[in-house]
Image 1 (cartoon, rainbow, N blue to C red):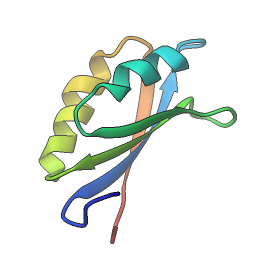
Image 2: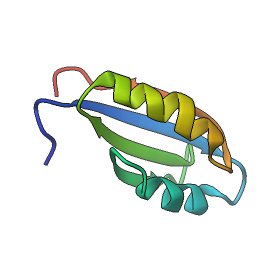
Image 3: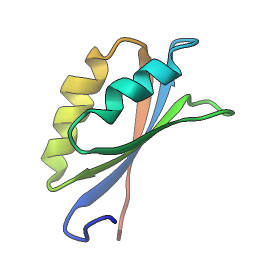
Length: 83
């Protein structure tokens, strides 16, 4: 269950062909990632559910971790409001 004192972020990720499963496995072990799911249709290949105590913690994930994961081509973040 998500804590009301945290920030929830959904991250949609485009991966290199055939690497969505590897990217999911790698991200499931990352701090603050509550779930990483492959997507079967659409412009994105993986969706993450991230919960952070402070939005600055998400910035670390977005700017330092995600760009260095092999197989990630691009990503888009959706910071949930009122969760």
